[in-house]
Image (cartoon, rainbow, N blue to C red; front, side, top):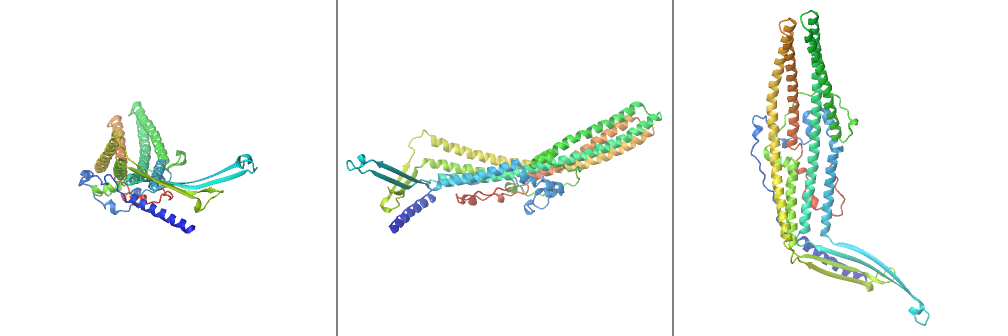
Length: 498
């Protein structure tokens, strides 16, 4: 009995293997993916006069913020990957895309359900035995496996898997882009906060200087060589500058709040000790333009979207062809609670094929829509590349010209300080009016604030350039399509990059 059942099971397995081979090695309709060309310049326009450092591809791909050599920033930035909620949402989207791959892969395999039914019946003596007075009780059970299989002869499911794999890579790149963006926002907020600290120091020092001027004016008034108006003007200078110094605390606190939220923490949980903005601007190496296509996660996401849409063209074209499916049942039915006997075996097998004969142009419209979606993704990819080059060029010119501006404004500060010193001495000697001193001091403060703003902009431009260059990311960090596609549909989820 059992050898016969084993032979039949092996025969059924052989048929299933043959059908699976036919499905896996069947034709896959639709265009195979080729990356569309992108508008890549030979050189950067604004790199003229730039001091070239070691190419970025040859440098350590560690945390990009280490170039600033700021221990406090080094302690804040890693928290973005750990607790930032925007990054966490992107990670969840990536895990969702992995689950969708498994959902689609399941369509390549048959669906099997196992059913068990047991029915009992009873007939009384007058019904079952007529006049002999004997009643009867009967129990019938059925245990059967029902299977159905939609054969992917034309590659509709395989093209959909290909599209979903590319979509998972898009989400992985989006995760990297969200992380880089949040890290850049934190660095920007951090250097804005340090600039506020430096402005606070500048205004506090200016208040001290203005108070000395007020003392000189008061002495001049007491000596009868100055008017009460000069004293009032000097006092107004002190109070106005004190007011500006107080106002700096608003923006400083708001930058601190922003940093806390970017770290995934409530603002009340973070306090950053004041420390003025530094003077050392790091040198950022810039590679040749073509490497930018591999270094930016948003470009990688746009490129993977092209493959996603390209694969959907094939999945749509496959709808033109017949849909072939298999259904079958094998089981046992008989009397008793479990009728497992070859004498009680039952089975059925059937094949069906369905072909659209008329759909009023529905399939044609769907293919046209898929083609249009692909061409849209190509345009979006090329625009993403162009925007990336624009951002790099913008920051290159900003860093180059801000360095020149810094030198000029620093010289202006020195000249303005000299002017104030000379005018203050002349005022004490009674040779000029106090108005000249006030104007000179106002100009000095304006120049000092401008110099600080330029220095702040230089730090922000470096952060923006690093972000425009992709930070320390590289396209090789994407999970490979083969690795994602060959995952067992029953395997557990991949671990997110958190």
